[in-house]
Image 1: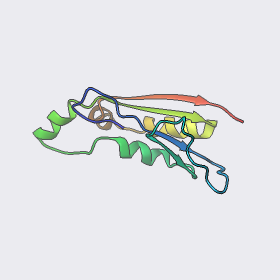
Image 2: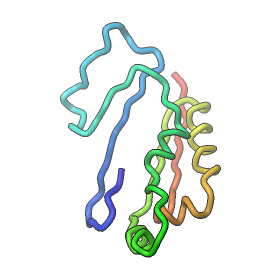
Image 3: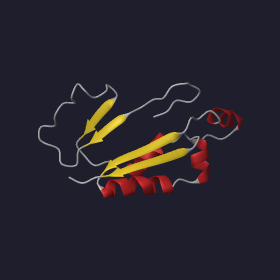
Length: 112
């Protein structure tokens, strides 16, 4: 996540379990308080779109978006989820990237 016009980074750690145990375990205390655990596979394109700044028009919006610090999309997991995240970032248009203050992608594939 990001906040405009601030000097800090807002971070959200979302852990998605593709084959969750039943019942779903509690978050380990070693994970940061901004972490969440979800028992389903995410819709990566939707997540990326939700994190983009809203599309406002007018001079106030131009000044507001000039301070967007940028966005990073990091995907770690099986090749399919990393490719889905890479494609979601690649589909962003120039206007969306500018509005976000830039978009970076990092992916790491692994299999168990």
